[in-house]
Image 1 (tube, rainbow, N blue to C red):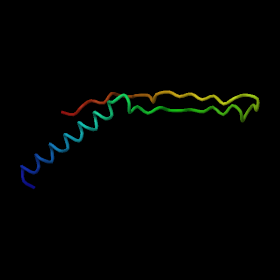
Image 2: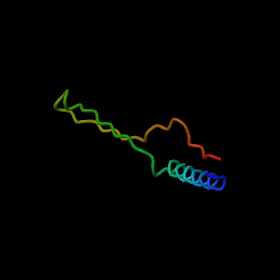
Image 3: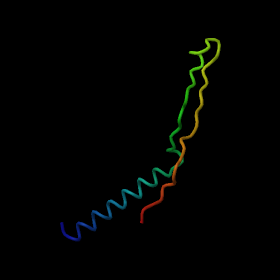
Image 4: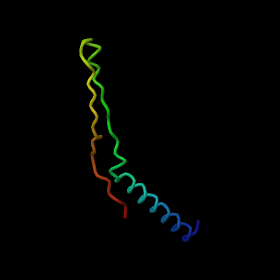
Length: 65
């Protein structure tokens, strides 16, 4: 592989990484976690509790340079 092909490949990878970062930073792509507490199995007269919340974000995504 010569230098021209190497730089072309590097630019392609950089573009893909930037696109992936943009997708991951989009708030519409956040995963929601739905937890169901099966209370009716313990006490038949109670209803199950369903909790839906956004998945925790441990660290922000930073774009590559």
